[in-house]
Amino acid sequence: MCLEIINMFSEGKTRSQFCARHIICNDTFEKWRKKHPLFDKAYCVAHEQARAYYDDLRQRYLVQEFEGESINWGLFNRMYNARFNIPDKRLITVKALGKAKDERAMIKSIMDAVAKGELTPDEAQKLAGLIDVSLKVTQIQELEERLRAIEQAQKTGIDDEGFEEVTDE
Image (cartoon, rainbow, N blue to C red; front, side):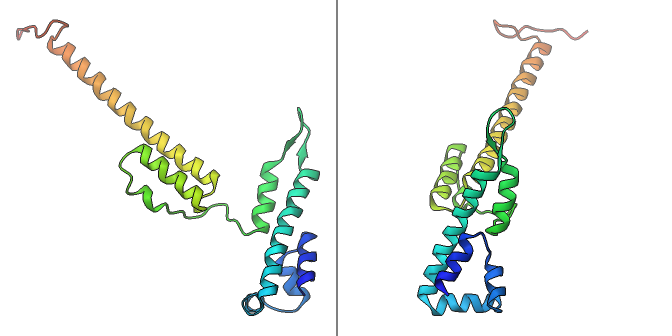
């Protein structure tokens, strides 16, 4: 059974296909993993074999040759994410992010979450992009306020030397 799951996964077969071949449900599969440590280890090895299979598949067949070789990442990500149950979108929580006092602390909390495996690098990049946009919005608002203050000062007659009296006419 252990060698069989490794062989099946190394050919790109899925957990569902393994269960179907043995006429078992997913719950039984999970019970086998808990009850038989050797089967659980074989499943872990098989999972890595499946990832290697998809990496090899990407290298062999998903190369586009339009203006030089490149990978069709859209197709690969769809195939890979479906195979390994990685959702396109998922709710993420970075605990330290809400407590961060400034942008530097926010970025540090995101980097820590990546290091701990709580976030993927892609998710971290998207969050950092949101922080960057937030910073730009704040900077634009500050510039607009300063510009309004300068325009208001010019209307009331303030020059470089100080106040200038303006008569009401």
